[in-house]
Image 1 (cartoon, rainbow, N blue to C red):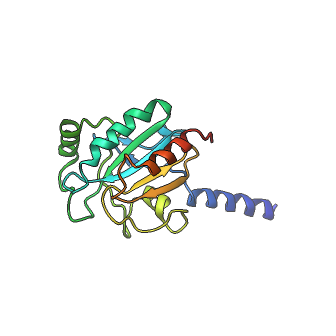
Image 2: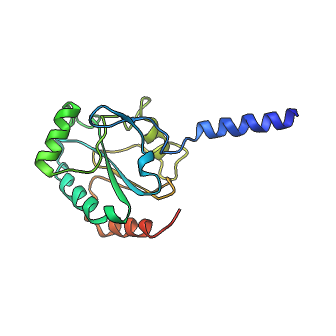
Image 3: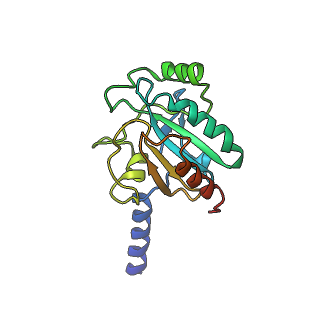
Length: 180
């Protein structure tokens, strides 16, 4: 009986320590509590974004990528972050307005989060923390993390990788053709 109870406690603890990316609490750009659960089973391109960065023009290409592949199961998720040069100082309302008016962004945007450091959001801790296959500090805005239909990180691309990159597109297409 003790062994069974220990096994149950270990299993519950193990599950609690390795939450699925779909279970992390998020706040969307409009201030509503949400999660990535609505994207469960899709290929997700997670991008830490900023409105006053030299790479901000990537919003347009990210939107084009989203439009091209969304019917096949891709979703782009933008996470504003002000950790790199203070390049995302605006409020969520201002970020949303800027993205929609300037770049026609329709993909999901979320409230600002931290992607590095002791207060890094748990989603990013899971994606790039020590236990991840693509672990390591996020180096700059517009770092792209591709997550497969199974919720596991596949690959990571830096700010210099354009959303039009052949390598990124090929990885997306392979992920879209893979069932969980």
